[in-house]
Amino acid sequence: MKTLLMSTAAIPITAEERGRRRPVARDVELYQRMLSKYEHTARLADVLGFDGFGSTEHHLQTEGGESMPNPLLVYAKLATATSQLQFMPMSVVVTSHDPIRVAEDLALFSHLFPGRLAGVQFARGYQTRWMQTLTQSENVVALNPTSDQRNRDRFNDYLAVIEKAWTEDSFNHHGEFYQAPFPADGIRDWALADWTRSFGGPGEVDADGTVRKIGVVPKPLQQPKIFIPNTFSPQTAIDSARHDRILVIAAGNREQARATAELYRDAARAAGQELRLGQNVGMLIKLAFGDTYQEAFDFAARTYGYWYHNFFQKFGFTEVFRTAADDPNRPFDLGNERALTERMIENGQLLCGTADQVCEQLADVARVYGDGALDWLIYETWGQALPDDEENAIHQNQLNIYAEQVMPAFR
Image (tube, rainbow, N blue to C red; front, side, top):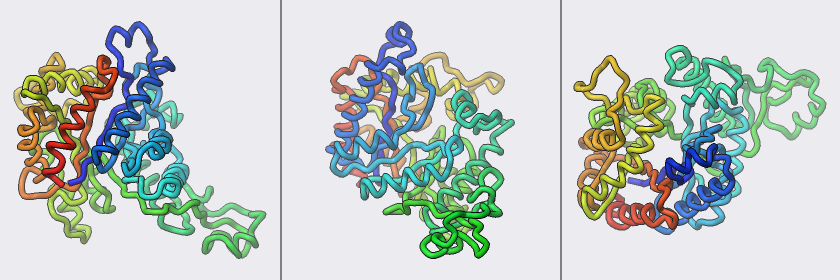
């Protein structure tokens, strides 16, 4: 089982500072502090032997949450500061970008830093503030009943363009949301028609000088593995299996996680590919360590509990932790971060305790809660955002414990 460290790009400040120095993500001193701690985390992950390192893409988060608009650009610096660590954007929200530019950027990174791109995770985008602003469209986000299907269709269309760009020397794409070339029935009177017919890709230009296909430069040095996150939608698991994409499960409990992995395996089988349970699958898991269970719990509440209660819950992401005992007529809210932390532990989304205790809990995850074998563990960490950890000592200790006392048992 490989481990990819998913590290947040949150500004490490107290609640008091967040109000006094607002908007904190535009405070250049604070942003530099965040970048410094982020680089320290990547360097440490490299030394400790993590297989990969990633961060989410988000925009306009002036409040200082996930304030990283272009992870790939940051990885270009980090690749020169590390020796073997691989990097993976988690995620590129492809529905807010031009898909050809995305294909070009990732392919170019693979040439500049050979062997250092672990893959790329593509997501559909759920935050209206920046999705609508960057796309200049309404009803464009995922998870919204009025726009979810249209968002999924756009995502599938754009992803098809990226895959063609990486695998075909020349192609034509006529989708609902994207055409290549534009218009897809041809660009007339191409000035370099003879030159392109002689030296360009096959079929790019016809005898009349019309551009019929395009070729994207460069072709990746290595074909990037595509990862797809899955929290709620069975259709995402099915589509990922059909297209041989790696599924990253962030289910609310053990039963949902196993059921999603089984759905992915069965959909792959229906598409003609035999996979074991857990093959081509990653699982997003939170980890908290301490010399005692209580110490680990306190760390978890200050990090995972804090951010999920105060931030992600507003977008409905904690709904996956709902049980039959919760009022079905009210939005899920347990009232405070410690109660939410306890629920995440109960549901298996958060592994908590001493190194030995976490090893026992992780064994179930590695088996996909049954007889499977998980390919990827996505270790989600928010320790870098602790405001009172100026030297990253607490965060560093968490990563050291995992790398030295837990990770070797699952290689």
